[in-house]
Length: 439
Image (cartoon, rainbow, N blue to C red; front, side):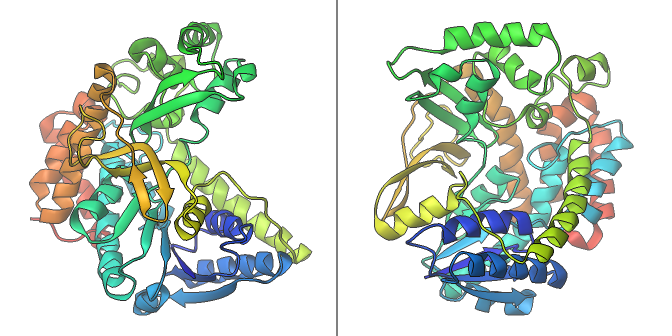
């Protein structure tokens, strides 16, 4: 079996995912094919994965492939391809995504999923993934592509609509959503045996149902406690708890993410909202700098010890691969096309996040039905931007970039149409060769 990791320079993440594989009796003997375009980062990852493999029994074969010229060989014969690339990295592209909009008074928190930052990240990344797809169709046409790269819905939606590659998008937030909510509201006694349904779109999947082990609806108490917690003082999840109050339901991804997916919380005309909802502006750049510095210190410590073990994480990737190989079913929350209207009140060409059963046949999405109308309406404000951004990437028409930014809830509520168009032009110029030509 061969598992190819695209973007293997993401050392911490590749360690977690491939470490999970090494913990699996089904996967531990695989060839782990590591691919990146950055030689230093690839070498560090190979060193760490090799150290972990040696510590855990040395069952795996590890190969490394540097640069576009070696990409096909990295992919050749792969059974599974894991995608964790970041086109343009923190420096320069993430810095550009934050600093240029600031000149227009547009502030962001994460900027990797929606908003003008998410749009630009998708436009940088889709051409690279199109190249991956062409190679995969040639050298590993039956491989399953596990996408972890953001903006999830845009990238996964593109792969599923415009390539022949079998693709599922995976996020970290679905499997911890209800646990996090119950713990922060002091309802830990309801964790065991709980029943839940999560559906919507990536980073805005709605916790539609939450029941205890006896089938009792937990939402009445959740709604009461959420409102009480937000009224009692500042904490790090105020936006999502406000969603419960205003829309009736909790969402999968964090408050710092969801603060910028709408027109409600980051408003130059109401600067007091930033403090009221404890919104961490410029959070992602700070996080990137801390992670870069933290990794170098961790790497030095690992080299001194010379060994590395791993306990299996909650990531979906290794469980999916196990289920496909063994045929033993495993349930995930996956990002897939809304084919056949899995969610009946969202468009069929949207990329949705729904329960999926994984088995020897691959990814089998489950029909959900209708979302509460207000939840579908919130999702649609994001889906509009996602579909227009994909259209821009496919057609290379600059008008579709303008339209995506105009329809973005945060951009559209803060800037005039002329400002939005100028902002897009400035970002395209600043990104230079990281973007293809648009007309």
